[in-house]
Structures are given as C-alpha cells and as structure tokens.
Length: 533
Image (cartoon, rainbow, N blue to C red; front, side, top):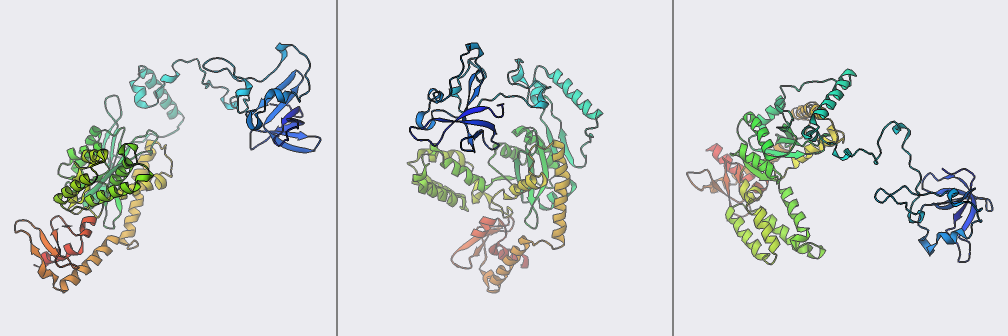
C-alpha cells in the first residue's frame, strides 16, 4: 500500500512531441472501478486517474507499472526517468524496488517491465489465516486426493477414508445437523446401494404413477435421461406417458450412478412386472445403451427414435469439415440433403423408403463421406425413424418433446434452477412436489378447468367422417383381404386415390395418419363402418 500524500510522477497520456513524458503530483488514493491511482496535481488543482505512476521514496524511486510502457509511442522507462529528480546516492543493497514473486518453474525473478498489470503483494483473507490452503504446499500427495466416493473407496487408503467419513457422519449426528430417514417403501420399487462391486440404482414409482401406467401405458412410453439435478452428477432416467388431455405424466424414475447398458437392464427388469402389458413402442434419443436395454427387457415393443434428435444429429454432422459439405458456400447442398431425409422420413412403405434411399445415394454419389455416413448410421435403423416403421397408433408423437418439457419444469420450477442438489432433496422433489403438481393438474382436468385438446380434435375428426358418410362415401370402402383387417378408404378430394387403414393398429396411410399416428377422418369413417355392421 502506498502512503497517502506521497510525491509521484504520472505518465501523461495526451502530450505533444516536445512535452515532458510525466507530470509531478501527489498520491491521494486508489480508483474504485479500475486498477488505477488517483493523483492530485497542485499546479492545475485537478485529480486524475493514472495507471503509469512512479513514486519517490527516501531510498530512491519505486516503479508501479500496470500497463506496458511501450504502448503508444514506445515509451521507455529510461526516458521517463530523465524527468525525475536525481535520487540521493545510496548503497546498492539499500535500494528498495518492487519485484515479482519467484517463478514456480525457474525460480527467477521477472523484471517489472515484463508485467502488464501491477503485481501487488497477495495476502490471504483474514478468515483463512488459520488454514493451510496454498498452492505451494509441501504435500506431494495433494494431487492424489479422490474427488468422488467411488475413487475414495477404491483407493489404497480406503480404510482411512472410510474412517474419516464415519467420523464426519458421527459429528453431524451429535450436532443434530440432520435427521436420517428411510426411503418410503411404497414408492421404492428397487434399491441397490453403491459399493465397490455394484452401482447405485434407485427405482421410484408412486401409486398415482402406477395408475397412469395402467391407463395410458399401452401405446407409447417416452424414455430419456437428464443430468445436473444432484451434486453427484447421477443421471435421472424418466419414463413418461401421454394422458387423455395430451399432457406428459411420469410413470417411473430411475436414478443410477452410471449410464451403462447393464445397469439400465437391471433397473428396467424391476419395472417390467409393473406393466399390465408391454407397450406398443418406446421413444428415445439415439442412445444405444437405452435402445439395447429396452430391446432386451421389452422384446415385444418397438423402439422409435425422436425425429427432432435425428434431424439435429444430421445437421450437426453436415456442419463438420469431415462431411465435405460444410461452410456457407455449400448451404444449398445441405438444404437439399435435409429435404431428402425428410422425404425418406415420410415414406409409408419399406419399398418407398428403399426407392428413395437409392435415389438419395445416386444424387449425392460424388460425396463419398455423406453416402458412407448414411449407409453406416441411418439406413440400417431406418425402421426406427421413418414412417414405415411406425404404422400404428403412437400417440400423435414424433419427438420426445413431452419428456423434454417435463425435464425443463423439473429443473427450473421444482428444483428452482439449483443444480447441485443433495440426493435426498431430489427424492423429496420427485415424490412430493412433483407428485402434488400432477395431482392438481388432474383435478383441474376432471373439473373441466383445462381444455381437452385431444377430445376437441377427435370431435372435429368425427364430424368430418360423419359428413363423408352422409355423402355416401361409406359405400366405396373395400376390404383388402378377408384374412387381415386392412381396408382401402377413398380420399375425399381425389376419388382415384385411396388409403390403407387398419383398425387393429389404429393406423391410416393418409398424410394426417402418418404424421399423427392417431385417428384421422378416413380411419374414423372405416371404424364407423365396422361399428355399424
């Protein structure tokens, strides 16, 4: 710290060619908003901020430089010293100058001229003086401290770490820091504690979730994971269904210490007996651990890919330099590629997809990386993302948007945006706060306080089908085969065009039926024929 009222020389910023490089003043303090000194000039009576200042002491000059002296017109320290009063002659050992701390690598002192900012003496805060917390600690094992519970248990000093943790727990209990509680048995489907030989697995499902699974879990179940909801970075897997109002409601939670396929298999096997029957399909992102685990536990169910994440993965790959179509000059080519993927997505039959994929490979045959990418990653699993692989009622859903909305509400509404939650706090939020929220939503729905968009859309579709039946369109419906329940329903706009409908699968090949995966007017008309006759 400088002495208030010390004489100093401040570097002049706006000067002419023949003017002096510095001006004498008096130090009166530090600026609050910048690393600069406040200098009072007696001749002009002004106070200015300056970052380039030399102080005059009894033993000579002390230089405090916070920016390079070579900025602007190559100002050098030697030239600045020519305007300073000549100090008294003293012995070299008595000269006091500010120097930098020794370098941790070479042990040499850096010169003041090489510094861009002031190197003031760094002192620890007052409250830390009782602790040894410096970087230059003599402890050679400072870098070997485990950061997670698994690392502590598997380290050579595992017994010592276990003893230290037990002592910490005992002190917390003695001071009544918290109260240990057991997990509610009614809501815990499966619990496997974490140790050296096994991973942590917690499977949760409340009574209301079981009822939602019974009522809405036959067509499609959404499955995805989210992170940053607890201080241990454990992922939270959620299974979610669509209710009668089109809202997503969770039916189970899975908390694990990792995301491996074997861990997910064990958790899903514990959930499998709670399903009244295997759902028609699951919808996931392109996570192979989730896909393989679902195929192993639910072999009867299809696993569909979220179209949004499929398109997102394709766009991100096209933007890479390895794709050979990156850069702003090839934006039109990327648009054509995306349009081809959308056309392949809309193919209602496998033969249509094969024809479109051959056309795609022929059109972009000169882009070898693109063709290899498509044939390796997307063509073998086309039944998971193209429409021909989901020709049944999949709940009017092409994406995982419902479960993404739930994760957003969980993080920013129920968890209040706090990422490093304790695990017991997360369990309390999932089993209490979230459960209460969905109970309120159900009461509002049953009281008619929330609009039922699904029922409104179905009523509109039924009115259109009734109008077509009144016009005699029902006489044009033909059966494709007597062995299978597939019917040909003519189009209302183009009588030469007909659509294939299947009442068993709740499917219609019209554009609305393919996109929504639910009842359209053609299917409703055919269903009415089955009901009447």
